[in-house]
Length: 331
Ligand code: 13P
Ligand code: SF4
Image (tube, rainbow, N blue to C red; front, side, top):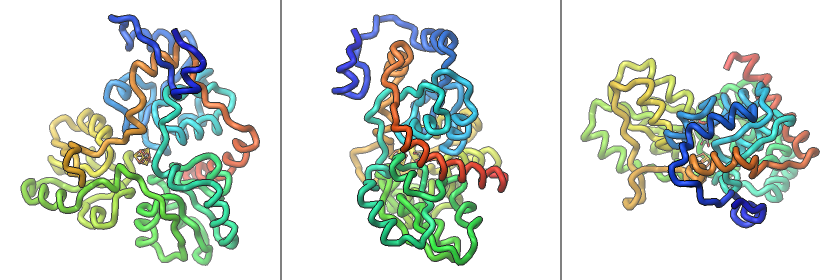
């Protein structure tokens, strides 16, 4: 039986589920009874994507959370996504099936260090990637996602000096495209830095007709050989429109489920990784969420994401600014 101490100790509810329980049926039933919605990121496993009310990239998910009319938002994703949902939809109970679902970008940007960095560069506008904690967002002027980062930077007056945080790869990708005074926080995503340029080149030699599509969180050598670079949502839109038949995909493998659903006739090959003992690059944080945890979380309405109200208010301002700019620019 579920004990509150489980969550405190483990971050999730640990209970043996009755053998033979039809998780899909039970989740569906509770979702209706409790007026709950399930939001899932593209990096979730296929079974979770298939039961979600909405599957999307970080920008889509924050917009959906902002418009949600549900009593409960169950977030199948990572901590910063659930925090953003809570900030934009404070009246809803936000549930995260495993509170340990962090993100290496949030972890490589500790608030105390970032605060010093921002104070030392007080004349600069702080543009922060949504993959960051609420504390970091509260120290920022505008939030961005990988879908809108370039346009948000470009929407600022040319002379405005910028701090870009926390992803050094997305920061470099943008700073190479624009002529701006940008200083970049040196955070990184361990999943996207795991792709091997040598492995990708070797694979491309064997699969000459394959296009290379990668996320901007990848390192520069990987981005340099890519035919297309974009957020998860952009990559999905690209393969739907593009005439190619085969792709080497340089992002977390969860997205391949949606790619195959959209274009079943095409072939999607996960980009090779540096660590030879790994088959592909998976986000261990995203994969902490399971169907079993979703079932138990909906059943007990725990673990609930609780946030400090002042912090929520401070973090909301730069997120709203991102949504306003994106709406104005038609992103
Ligand atoms: P997007 O879904 O915005 O492309 O973000 C990718 C990511 O790493 C989310 O954690
Ligand atoms: Fe964070 Fe990288 Fe996982 Fe995305 S894939 S949640 S950026 S660790």
